[in-house]
Image (tube, rainbow, N blue to C red):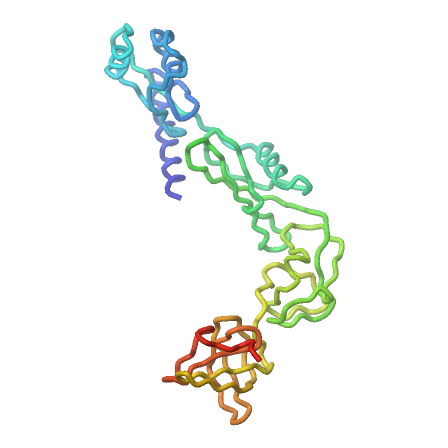
Length: 314
């Protein structure tokens, strides 16, 4: 955010300088790239035309900013390279800026998603440095309201400078398949291939495919016949509410193993409630692995998984 603000301030400063130039000052010469070379200075001071054109004489200004070589600086450079220049010659350089066009934005979006139908609705209008416009697929937000244009964040790659952020809003339509639940999916339980089907689809991108769904778990109940969305998925629980689990209670070197009933679902490392069927008491234990929890009887501590756990052993 800070580099972007500085860039905009530099553009404003350059605009003010350009207005001053219109009132009588010598206009600034555009320079491309990160360095000012002999060929750049030779455009204003012919004496430098005899030098190697690519010889670097100094750093170029930031995009939108100016760099002025005073008459004294020009004279020092001339003496260093044995050149004779007229006294009082001052040279100003500026890095040009530009603004995006709808056609350029559309071309960059289509390069990222060649098979999609894309309509550009709006895009950033602030001045930007010349460079390659890029809209990576990772910058496309697909978790927006249905029917709304999608926000797509991109960058202008301007050589050694930091990428300059840009954005676009577009309607994006892709063709393919979407995955639909063939039966009700229970939260926390791993989803199996037999619970899913693929249907033809045309609409916004971002829906998960089979490889991104099978083995995951629903975060909420998903009714049969519902197309599955990415934000509804999570890692499956290792212990599900209501199921019987193995409970390991440790006290020093002593180990007590009993069976309990999970009062809530949980993943490895999470603390859940376990009911002891023998007396109805609720124990707080840590999920160690699938179907197994561990706790310590020492000072009522909740034991972390591992540390001598025999979960999974007969």
